[in-house]
Structures are given as structure tokens and as C-alpha cells.
Image (tube, rainbow, N blue to C red):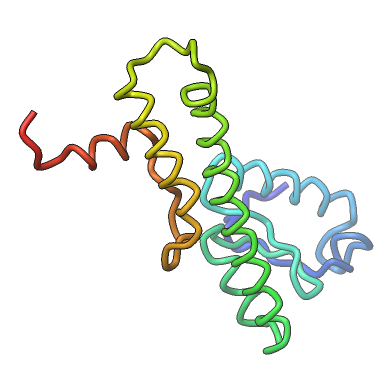
Amino acid sequence: MQDIDFKSFDISKDSLIRGDSNHTPAEYEAIYADVAKRCNESGEYMIDCFNGRYTVRKISEVEQIHYAAMTDEQKVAYDKEQSDNKRAKVRFVRNSYLRETDPCVSCPDYPITDEERQAYKDYRSYLRDYTETEEWWLKNPMTFDEWINQETEGTDV
């Protein structure tokens, strides 16, 4: 098999399956496997099956290429799905922080001071109110340590 520049790999789906005047299906299978291996080794490229072709592309560019090919209606649906996914991920993080801190406020025997317990209660209020802030889904809420440190910044300790 000839050594090819894996980044230039671009064949039709039909050629990969049936072969063509350049290669048999078995040869294409071997070339495809070699290209896939080299893409994985690079960590920067992938084989993109799009519009009936197998093309090596930079991973960072695939989403943009697919998005540009969408109709306006598809873009609206895609954007909504992405937004919903971002919101769900941030809610998941927020809810996990609430679960982690639940024993600190709900178990009277939890080994912390009254001052620390109040700090956890205040933090949990911050978490519950988080989704009411503007553009909350664009970043995760702060961890307790981040929140407590920003709360005490600028105060004399």
C-alpha cells in the first residue's frame, strides 16, 4: 500500500464499499483503517462521514461545516437543542453541589460550627437562586470553596 498524506483522505461512501478504478474494497478498507489510526494518533483530525463522503477534517472544524450546510429551520432546532443541553448540564452541576452540601445543613450532628452551617445554608440559597440570574447557563455555579472565597475577598480576616 502506498503511503498517503492521511489529511488528504477524501472518498465517496460508494467507493469505500464497492471500490473503484483506483482501489478494491479491501484496499480501501486497509487505507481507511490506516487513516483512522493516524487521525487518532494526531488527536486533531477525524474521518467525517458527511454528504456521502468520507473526508479527513480537523475536529475543531466539523461542527462548523455541518452547521453551515443546515437549512434555517435545522439551525433553529439545532441551536435550541444546544441551548437546552447547556442548561441541563449547568443544572446537573448545580444539583450535584446541592446534594453534596445537603448533610451540612440537614444533619444536626454534622461536625461543623454554627457559623459554617450558616455559610452552607447561604451557599445553598445562592445555588437555588442561580438559575434566576441572567445567562446562568453560560457557566457553572461556583463550588463552595470558590463561593466562600469570593464572599470573603476584600474583608479583613
